[in-house]
Length: 146
Length: 459
Ligand SMILES: Nc1ncnc2c1ncn2[C@@H]1O[C@H](COP(=O)(O)OP(=O)(O)OP(=O)(O)O)[C@@H](O)[C@H]1O
Ligand SMILES: [Mg+2]
Image (cartoon, rainbow over all chains, first blue to last red; front, side, top):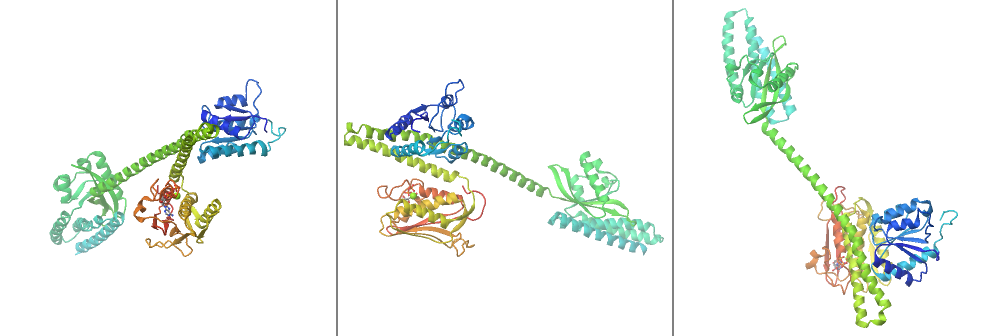
């Protein structure tokens, strides 16, 4: 899964810069598509105008986003045939139990807290990309439509 | 002498009736006032007996006797009237059609009438229609019964409506036909008003409790929203601070001298520390907000699990740690785990300078509570976590459980001073107590109780 793009849904410019840097530092060569709000995400993933949809390797999604919350987006993604099985990793500051519970209930594959300490975040991103891009085997597209 | 025997029979019957009336009134009202009705009741019924006796006397063949009997009767009636006049109860007798036959002095005073003027009148001549209707209805009810009827009646007074507890019973002639109804009424307005007051105060109290609850729920919700936003919004800028100072250090370190790099490290560390403080604050507020679920908790198992975690995280430490068997209580397992975790990690931390650290977890009998609440297996009672670490000066013991208060400098032992505040909060929510003993250089012991009784949250 090193050739498909990574979708980062995040609106905080500092977080975007630091996350992109963390991927670069960890040698992740995938294209990273950054979307700053949920509306953009929905038009790219589930286009209504016939343009070809984005097929990301993984989606990294914050919870607090303008227009649609990460949880609402997750629900949309899971209720559409085309994106039902794409791995969604909640990448958020929240450590609140209710966010964790809601995320899993809506079908998130993983819930990761962004730590304050950057060196810790670097390790988190390394582990995360190794697991989701290399180790994890995705559902074959014949069984799970892309 | 037939009249005399008639009279005796009538008297006996009526005295028995009175006894029953008084007894019934006592039972129904359950009040000392009711017992006070005894005397006037005897009096009235005696009077009633006389009336019957007089009727009987007319049937007498010997007219000579009749006159003597009548004299005697009048004397009797006078005596009885004196008795019923000198009671605090209001006594009256009305015939089956509601016309007054007799009232006592209390009645006269109460309604400002003279008994001579009353004879032949009905309540409808004296009171407003609704009041009179109510009296009449009660008279009829009493007439339909053989035994005395107890009821509450209301009568208008200059200072407002008064409430009476009234015993009414039918007066029957020799053939057993009721021809009058006698009523004995006692003013219970004061008691009634007191009752009313109690009811009002209760309702007020309930109302206030409801209001407070709504307020509390609102402020809990607010606190919840506040904590939630703190957890997200306050941490984000810290990530920026820490992240970019780290990035500067890595990417531009060649262009910075030693001091420059040191400054950057400090910025990063400060942001990191503040992140930790925010986490601690959130944990403290979570300990207050989290719903409390009371279940049996195996404290021994919890303590052992935490001890395992501590020694795994710090495999170089040599700590002799014992946990007493069978420590158990009723409480919220997640919250009580916080208690043990904080006490144990403190013990772990403050024994770090001991070559051989000792930590004991156990329970002792609660001496302050006589109901004991401790069984030999260690279930409930006073739980403790004791260590042989650096200890503390008991002069400052009162500061232990205050958030962000520490008795040891951060250079010697790291920490934010929130752990024990969380512990105290959780113990309070379990209606328990917590206290500590310590000696500098020798060690410390933390004791806590957990109230087994289920019920309201202590927060
Ligand atoms: N077992 C102990 N022995 C000696 N002193 C203790 C012990 N436990 C607590 N204290 C004293 O009480 C203070 C408050 O303890 P508390 O657990 O609240 O904070 P902390 O451990 O310093 O920091 P934190 O728990 O937030 O990491 C400690 O700083 C220490 O001075
Ligand atoms: Mg502590």
